[in-house]
Image (cartoon, rainbow, N blue to C red):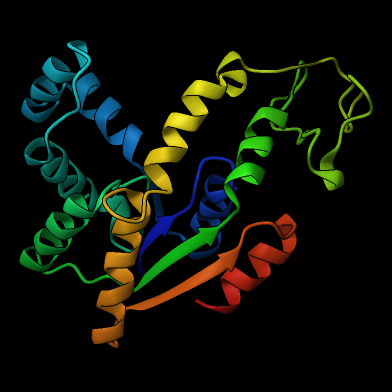
Length: 224
């Protein structure tokens, strides 16, 4: 089972990806991790990518896509994989699709987690970290996991907010790329949606991201 997973920052995509990883014993691959692994491992592609990253430039697709393909063919992907965070634009979607075809790797599902842009932003800015355990869920904008004032809802530990979660300019920039339906990330999702309409072996489905975690998970699994 090979999956592409789309969703804006703040939609809970990473959480759902982890659930699928554990349930189906597939690799959950985040695009940022691919860069870090190659750079840390000193691979040729990693060295080339680092040159661009150090200059503050985007890593070209000619470097990124071979990295992605190499990662998808590693041993832990034999049972399948879930790719999260790539492609980020329509051109990358086209190139990734062509490369997967050339490598004989078939997509099974493409999932789009839909969430209103303002709600996604609120969820990011509402996240709070517990001093005792960062995995304790606390978010001032989500009723089900709203903290007890400035205390963790699980253990009463003190809470804090990450600086980047409060950077509205950075959040807006990331979301502008994601919600762009002409050339951005949603455009890449729609590329695969159109592909699924022509190829019955690929299933494309959407999930309502504003629902609670359990409901989204149940709907997600029922579609697989």
